[in-house]
Amino acid sequence: MASAGVEWAFTVPGESFLGVLDALPGVGIKVVATRHEGGASFMAEAVGQLTGRPAAVLGTRAVGAGNMAIGLHTARQNSTPVVALVGQVKREFLGREAFQEVDLVESFGRLTKWAAQIDDPATAGDVVAEGLRTMATGRPGPVLFALPEEVLDLPASRSQSAVAQNTTATPPAAPDATSVAEVIDRLAKAKRPAILAGSGVIRGGARDRLVALSERLAVPVFASWRRPTAFPNDHPNYLGMAGYGSPDGVLARLKATDFLLVIGCRLSEVTTFDYQLPAPRTRWAHVDLEPRKPGAGLAAPDISVPADAAAFLDAALGVLPKRSPVPKARSKALAEERAAYVAATTFADTDEWRGPGIHPGRVIATLERVLPKDALLTTDAGNFGNWLARYFHYGPQNGFLGPMSGAMGYGLPAAIAASLCQPGRPVVAVCGDGGLAMTMNELETAVRQKTTPVVIVFDNQRYGTIAMHQRNEGRALVATELGPIDFAAVARACGAQGGRVTRDAEFEPALVDALKAGRPALIHLEMDARWISPDKFGE
Image 1 (spheres, helix red, strand yellow):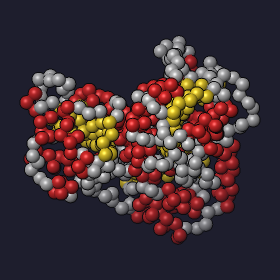
Image 2 (cartoon, helix red, strand yellow):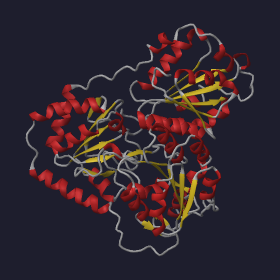
Image 3 (cartoon, one colour):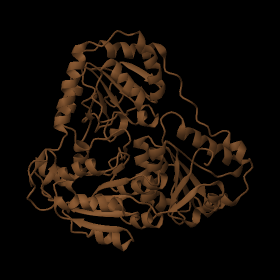
Image 4 (cartoon, one colour):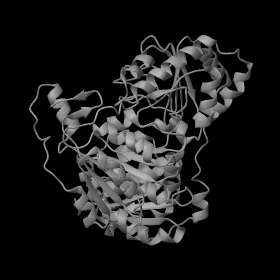
């Protein structure tokens, strides 16, 4: 694992994998004890998403694997490398319904890209090497090793160096030159082209190259859902993030596109607005380590380019000098579209909110104005996230971590992991009361590990997204109304700083104070439950 880039391991320790815990510090892997395997797996995923290098999550048998499953599913949907190590019962007990026994490979392994059980020290090196190689080759993803308890203390038959040589990922093939030229030709000749960029651009460190391509062809760029840092939001060619929270103009413009380049993006349900994109009349190209194949009612792209985003953009920029200048009409249209996007995503801070609690739009506008330019934001699931998606504009130095899986509880563990990986960087977790309550036990982890995230909790005392669906479908509000939690008191009980904000004017000084705290800090925002989204207010 160390040779494959693993620097961090997150765990709730169990007796079934003590041999692994013994070995990790000796190879320089830092071990963090968490309060729940769900938090541990979220932290491992966040490290992988932020750095591009895998982290490990460890848990015991069925119960530990069950708790970490949410993070494994998130890693798979986020295309994030993660190594899951799960202790198993002794080999002689397998099949007897032993304590906490389950077939880990056939159950939880199905959530991962690859899974295997290590039963024989003679083949252990080859199994480990294959798993780590598979994790990093092509589209990244989580892998799982099931570890029978007594096998871990048996001598390995191969040296560590011999195994390490076989963990290197198979590099992606160079993009086909003819396909690259065709994509550029289509972009140049289209009347209303567009680019939809995802995490492959971020992971490949290719954002500057995408900026250059966009500028030379005057093609607007959209970010896929929860990948807002794929393109600088302050660039005149940026027209917004697709998916939840986007203004109506984003979907309308993407549907009107005659040629769409999708690069480093998996075209998820949310990004495509329930698979409305690409629109039926849109011709499109897919540049991805694993481009879309037809199936499940989805059509294949007109041009398929299996390639790393950075390699494709390098090749594309090499083609561009041979092309004709971009028509002035396209540049003019792009400027008009940019102006409309800016107007739709700028919070109109004109009227004072006089209702109970804070105005969520004003909170996000304050975040954008006050946070340092290199701040990293994390989030989890909930309608509160639509305000962040609509009104926060990410500059070139900003970072963002969020789950494509829509998992609740991700925001705080991800912020802890980011603070561990990049100490000194301002990290802010933006959460709802429902999601934070699922992982707020990790506040103690944050304190113990001397991290410094700021946690902002939008509290409407309900599972707001589900309540919205119930109202929209004319249903009763069953199981979505929640009771109050004093989140600030919870934070203080764990050793963090905690405070409550009840009015807009209180938020900015509380945020400034939290950023200076030098320890984990939580700001509990009281929020009127009638705030549903930036476009809707009411019961």
